[in-house]
Amino acid sequence: MPYPVAHVMFFVFCICAIAVYTIFVALLRRDISSRDIRHLLLLLFIGAFFALYPDITAGYNIIVNGTLEHTLIGPIPTHSLLFSSFALLFGAIIGYMLYREFGKAVYMGLFAESASLSHLLLDDLARGGIHYFYPISSRAISVFSYMDVGLACGNLINYMLASYAAVFYLIAVMMMALFALNHLGFEFRYRSEK
Image 1 (tube, rainbow, N blue to C red):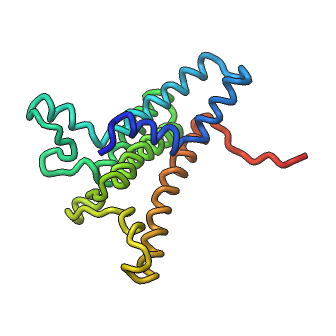
Image 2 (cartoon, helix red, strand yellow):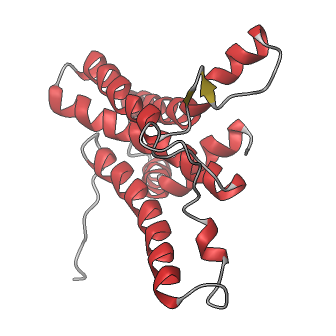
Image 3 (tube, rainbow, N blue to C red):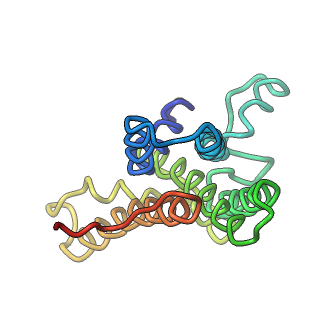
């Protein structure tokens, strides 16, 4: 399991890299107000919180049980798509409390969900096995472990499908974050050469 700071840095600098670039350019141009800075810091805080969301039980288990077990709430794995989907709900509630607009609340929920999914993605890369499909299946699977097999150990079709699935997962999380950020104040558009 990567350290918590690694989850936050992975989300901020890898998944939301274009947002970091946009903020950096605006700061260099001095084209940003203190109100905008507060808004950006709030987005970063929400992204950081939900990037750590699947490990939320670690604090409880350290205090109550004296262990670092952090992937279960009773029998329910916190590293699953089911548990991660609550980030969408909680993020939307936070978004509605902040903006009082249903549309922006939904995009804040998407942003929180992408942060939570980035946690699963990084844990899958690091340890190879997440209970993605709980409660449908209690089997831990790794999307990324199949990419290391190579063509010698499997057939070409399985290798290609596994590679496409892993890359699609990464791209889907990145696009979800960018889509949400685009509706939360960032403008991503193509400028044609003149």
